[in-house]
Image (cartoon, rainbow, N blue to C red; front, side, top):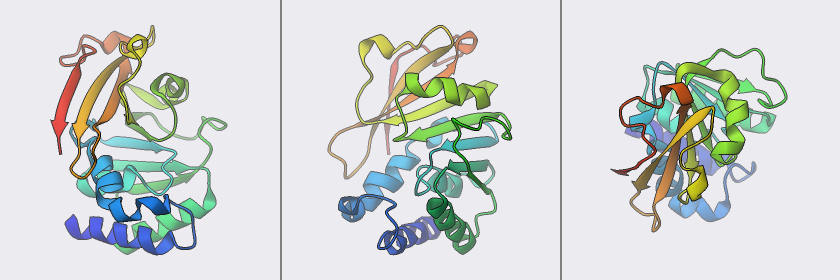
Length: 203
């Protein structure tokens, strides 16, 4: 897995010279800012099927697919050049558990199954993302949104359709803590640990 993660980082650096995948300012902190940040959701990835919305350069989908080889990951992005890069990544790293989907998920909601976990990193806020993500979410599923600041107070419990929980993650090499927002259907809100509290994880 370490070799595959290192290989992914090498491919990102190589392709980023000609295709804008991530900010060039992030190249010196690629491991902490992108790989370890992506892996921070590892403890909360639930069920066998996972959708990464707006995966871009394959973040967080590729690092998590490497770390969780028994789960099936669907990486969705509307940009063909990003999908071409991800095809090269999957071929080079021999990732058999990744399916690539070139699609605008908002404009085309059909053709995909329901997922146990949906990931979104740098796509939208939790509340804005829920209407699109929930269409593809299984009844016992969860949506994990990556953020860089604690949600506003009024957003921390969710709404009528979903419940929201915050997880703080301290990542080595990053000065400020990152936060994951976990959304579940409202009628599953009484599940253990899903009480709107803030949990703390150390990578």
